[in-house]
Image (cartoon, rainbow, N blue to C red):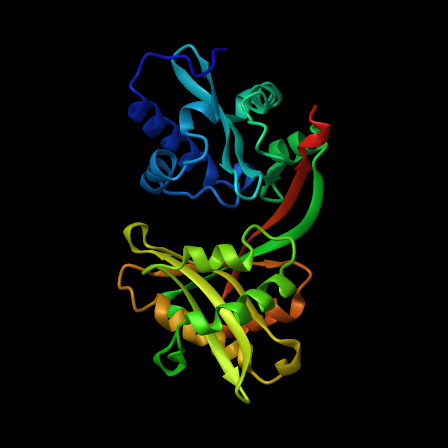
Length: 297
């Protein structure tokens, strides 16, 4: 096998890798939760979003003759001192390459990164085995639910206020309390807000009762509900339903969006029932793994 030392221009390599990941990530047996399934989207991300460590210094490739058979890499976030692992993506006849690719990838990780995350499908035995071999610990089990535009009726339409600067601290407090060890803290979510990433909120009795953070990518016809929480003082008052309706209404205001997805802890049966009642259907179940690099193998 040979690894990522080839003479093609970098953008051509990225296109090849994006096509490879898109093909494998569409199969539950090799699916990684945050990597995307569309070649164009993946290619754009690898070229423009890997800012702390660029593609050429973050990904390892394996070839058999001139055919790409394996890919693994990472998306580093120096501010959070962490990195999300992309893969390993390996052709079915070459699963033995996963461990070698992963070892080589670990050598590329800079000292600024102290934690690694993996988010494989429960059916992705290669990634799960790799996580075990490199001493990752399972943090949680997650369910991915999807809703299609046709599943959302006009009678469910609702409009909620967008988060304002005056409410930022209340949103940050609630988010960090509800999700203390997740991939975006409240401050990071505030920084991410733009025309395609929004936080909506709900007031009850002149108090901040809940929020919902959503993202859309019209260019790739994709949308997601990333986080939402209701203050425990106001639970059981249908506020979650109202937040959900408002977010979905905004998402489907983009004509390019025909489907949206969200991730929820598999043990949160109450939330799953709420989503399913609103029209969401279970799509995938995943594991969330973490590794502390202080004991790097």
